[in-house]
Amino acid sequence: MFWQEAEQEKQPQVPDDVVDVLFALQCKSLPVDHAHALSQAILQAVPWLADEDAAAVHTIHVAGSQNGWERPAHDSSERLLPSRRTKLGVRVPRYRVDNLKTALEGRTLRVADAEVALGVGKERPLSAETTLFARYIVAEADEDEDRFLRRIATELAPRGIKVRKALCGKTQPLATPEGTLLTRSLMLADLTLEESFELQQHGIGEHQTMGCGIFLPHKGIEAAGKATG
Image 1 (cartoon, rainbow, N blue to C red):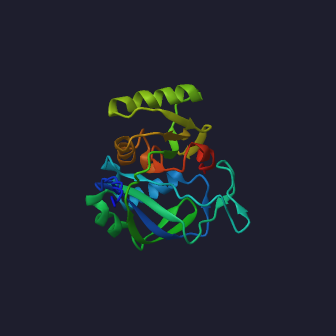
Image 2 (tube, rainbow, N blue to C red):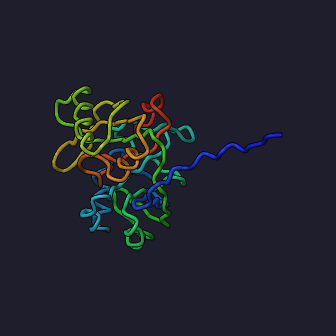
Image 3 (cartoon, rainbow, N blue to C red):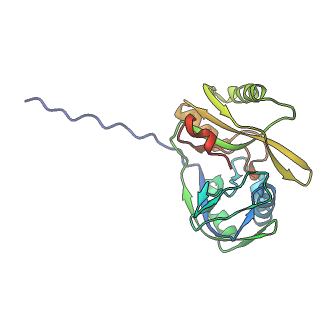
């Protein structure tokens, strides 16, 4: 009898020099468009984030529906209702994790008119998924979908990232004291592992402490349209 066990597929080695730190939070409600207010509150508590190239702040995201509540449109005057499972995510170099936890654990942030009380922060490694999604990427004025995608491809090429499959969303405004910041969501599929890691570690574009240009693992191109909010 000849019997040979199948070789186990090697799991990809995910780099750990950049990680997400997810903080438990308590908050009754906060504005749908809270990107700028959250950024300012965190930068006030953690000023060194502004000088870290690999640092980024995830906007607070809630499920599309919960207990009969439907997430309102981004430009709605309604509010988000965080659940017990809602987290605040901050992406930082690993060597800064302890500093970040010291600065934020047990702290209450004032985000616009809301109070966000933060609990313990837990590390989450980057993903080995090769389909990534960014909720907000800074868009240029009067830039249609085709021009947006072409610009993104041009900006990523020098970093060794090839755009093979891409899907972007409609223009989404983020309010700032200086005026409206235009953004679009973006899904990129069929990336190599190296490309995926590079995008997650460094993102793309400006205003990453406002949640822009931050890539997360995604289920695939067919679900990308459902991931905004």
